[in-house]
Image 1 (cartoon, helix red, strand yellow):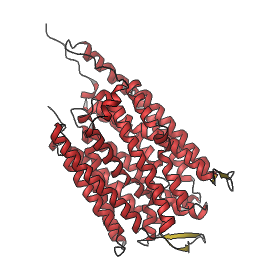
Image 2 (cartoon, helix red, strand yellow):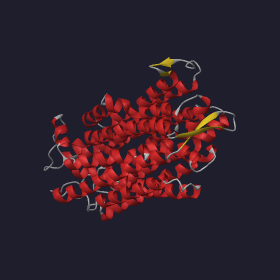
Image 3 (spheres, one colour):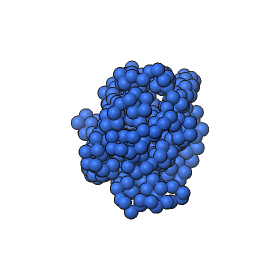
Image 4 (cartoon, helix red, strand yellow):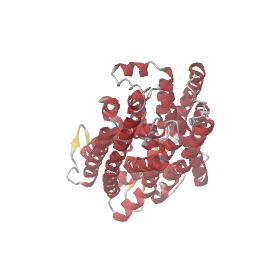
Length: 462
């Protein structure tokens, strides 16, 4: 008797690319809020009397709950236990809650003059909102990563991850290029946050729509498996799987490479607009446009390099090249004589290339090292390690600026006093992170050669 073949939903190109588009849009709205404050440092200093240390404290809050309360680890376990629908909806709602707290803190006047734990109450509560948002967006990130593996494994996996990251970076580009002009036009530093809050609500609705597609995918997989006499159900995730992940040297190399690389890029973006004003003499109203070139470039390049990895392989080599570019760019930013804005644009474009190379190969490499049933926890633990850097490095840079890099004061066109900084030392800190990232990229390549993970092999299988 001839067996009837059942087509699962992910084998339909239209279905899997539609699913990707929906969840990628949700991440776009999340990344818009994640970076919306980056160009507003000088406005916060002028209008709200924030110092560089307070701004660094606020920016570091992104990782507080994820790191110290282990929320990312719990999120990964919940993801592997409860699935992408439950975890994703919960994460998007947490994002909305955190954004609402952050908006209230910046917009209200009831906190003016109030002190909390020895610091401006506005800074502390805005930071708590940002920390809450950080839990939601990071758990949403690992959920979307597992969703992509679910729909694209054995197909265009790296390309799909690259396109998702590119869409998310579009949110970063919008934040860096529009938040300062919007705040000035509305004469309200909190208005860009309100806009992000509205977009996050739309992103939550989009993910809710995705859950129906995911339910249909699970149903088609169940029908296929029921008709397969050779099918054996995969053993459920258990807490002992965490030890399997922790004992995996290849996983550690990716996790450490991730924290070093992202700590040299995302915290840089938080200060990049201020760098353009202080070193390159760019008008504050347009200073966010230059760093916005970086994520804009990744929109095109990350999918390109992901597609290259899918078809040609060389994942570990791609990460090595990206780390080398990172070192070069930050070293050039640190040299005082290179202070023309044309150089700043060129270096930012080059940094965008490096920023496209590493993630396009790093995230699709994890499923080659870790079994699918453990992927949610594995990604969560990588993001947890990453959050140490996203929390610590911005605070370090803010402290270094206040302690060692103040070179004077000036008055802006509105009559507010703002501080001038020398960014040489912070750029050298970012460059040193790139050096460490390069070392671990080489270690990862050596481990791949030893264990045969296939990081240098193509992702696509016939």
